[in-house]
Image (cartoon, rainbow, N blue to C red; front, top):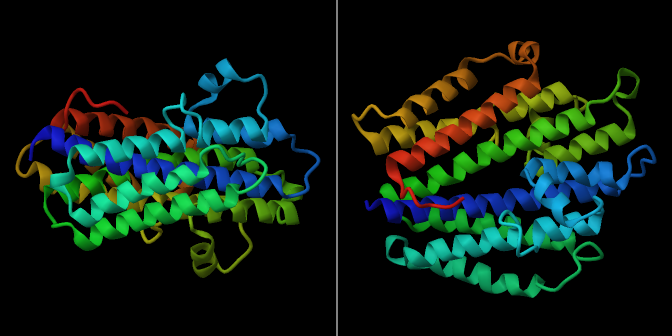
Length: 316
């Protein structure tokens, strides 16, 4: 496969996944804002959404405060923010259009329809009404895109690069969400188990579609350290770091064949840490330090994938 074609497919999948994760962050933050909690200001509530997406500095250049309206517009509809849902979906569609012949007609029609339908939300004040519906729509269209890809594409290199982009992006976003939210919501000992505490942690779990999985596995009150275990080490949790590397590692093995390339080694190293790691060791090291190291390693892995397989002119 031509590196340029692989590049477009890889980034198309990453942008779709990025849009979905941005919608999940906005949705969970909005749900938390509905919980009466006088101790938390509006700025303290919405700033983490920017921290998760890595947009704090860029946002500060254009805004004076972290209001709900400002953050929602910036992350959802701002045409000057490369990571906004508007721009990620537009970039996904442009990448798909460039390689229409490399995917099935159903896949192209799905992503083209996604972009055309998105116009219904342009101009809406999502901070006042319709944010939940908008986030649900983005998540549903992302799910539909992956379902169409899985159901119609040949299991060839094109399909492999779509899957690779999806799981590299998902691992990054899960690690960022857990890192920011864990330290924001980690309660003092006397507050553990309170109504607000339970609602906030359940909102975090729902943001990664893990609430029912948590109930099934632990059958107990939501505890922050168990949330961390679920999203880091549980390979049966679809959005966990372990599950993502379970997908990435064999894809790189298949794509590289017998070649000994750096991205395959990096993926194997990351995978081994998650497969054989223990949560008590991670907490002893420090969860923040572990997640920061993972994010850096995952970004380096993405850069090595770019260098080994994809066009060097690609833009993130």
